Length: 371
Image (spheres, rainbow, N blue to C red):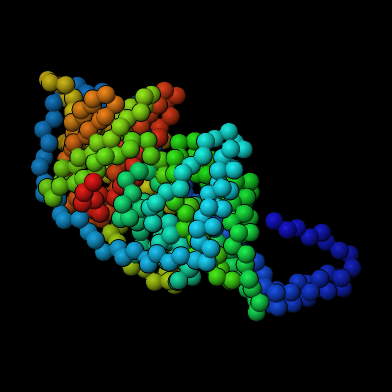
C-alpha cells in the first residue's frame, strides 16, 4: 500500500495530484485485488452421538445428474507454460520459506476456465457465469479431491498499458502471503496449507487486465472410485494413509445452477462477496453400527450434530465401510438428498494423529456420473 504524507503547502499537494492524474491517463494506473475462501464449517471430532441402535434406510429414487454448466474454452495466453511454471515456483518458494513441502502442478482445468470466464466478461468473483462456486466446476472438470480457490486480479487504466504478467504473478503472490490482513489471511492459509498436495493454475491476461486463479487440492486418499448410481448409491474407494481415519462425511447444499449476467456478477450479492462458503449443511453419512445397536435420534431419521457454536438435528443415512491394508471402500445411499435440482456437495473429512480435521473431497454429486 502506498502512503503519502500531508504537506503544509497546498499548492504542492495540488501539483502532485495533477501529476498523478496525468501519469495515470498517459501511462496507466496499475491496480490489484484479491479474493479468497472462507474457513470451512467442519464438524468436530465428537460431532455425533455414539451408535446405540439399528436404523433402516429409506429408499428414494435419485434424479439424473444435472449437466448445464458449460466450461469456458481453455485458452492459453502468451508464454502460458512459462507463466504457470513461474507461478508454481513462487508458490513453492513461499511454502519452503515456511518449512512446508512443495505442491505439484495439478491438471484440473477449472482454474483456467474460471480465469478465462472472468477475463472475457470482465468480472471478479468466486462464482462463475453459471452461478456456481469453485468446487462445482472442479467436480465437473473431473476433480475428486478437496479444493480451495484463491483469485487475484490486476488492471491498468490509461491509454498506454502493458502489464508484465511475470511481475503481476510475483506481486500478487507476495500480497496474498504477506499483505493479506484485509482477507483475514485466507489467501495465505490456502497457499500455506500443510495438507495441500497440488495446485492448478489459471491465467488470462492482456496488457490491461491480468486474472490469476489458484486451485489448491488436498489429495490424501488417492481416490480410485467415486461414482453415483441412478438410484443414489454412492461408492467411493481410495487409499487411507497411515495416521488418518475417516472422521465424518457431510453433505452441503447450494442453489441450482443459473446463468448469471456479467452485470450481476459485478453488482449483486452473493457474487460480489469477497469469499465463499460450502453452502448449507443438509445431511451426514454415518457408519453402519454393529448388530443390535442404533443411533439415538433427535427426530425421525435425524441425529444431533454439533458444529462450531450450534447444535443441529440433522438428516442422516448409513454407509458401510470396508478396509484392507490401507484401502478403504465406502458405500452409502444419498438419494434422500437428490430429489430436487439443488446442488449437493459431499465432503469426506479425515482426522489425523494430531486430531486435525482435514477435508479429502469436495465433490458435487449432481455432476458425478462415474469414477
